[in-house]
Amino acid sequence: MTAPVTISTIIFDSADPAALAAFYTVATGLPITSADDDFVYLGDGPISLGFQRVPGYQGPAWPDPAKHAHLDFKAADKEKAIQDLLAAGAKLPEHQPGGEDWTVLVDPEGHPFCVAAA
Image: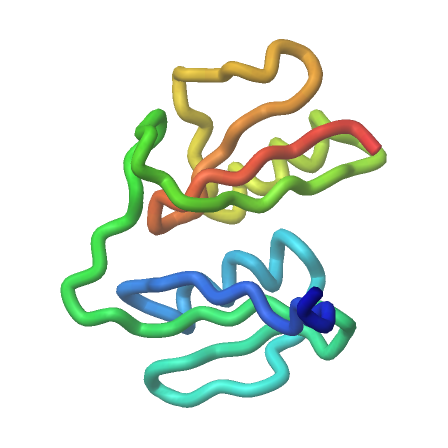
């Protein structure tokens, strides 16, 4: 059996890492901890978020079976969180498979994420 590994950072490919990191700073409250022209990192906890520039990058579509991963968020006030995220630049796609359990949003570059009640 292999020794377990620890997740340290979840990295998003991005056309504009600074802009996408700014959205997730508003969304999560995580501070920018490191940045240059091609990489931005948020948070200094056990798991951080990173954004890396990929020339010619185009975000995923939703719904699209080719998406590879997404984040799930919980909020004490789900509806207020959704409104705040929309005001910060997220979009609410028409396709919503979660019913009342969760709501799918997409970030400014098209990465889907879900918001559920805590």
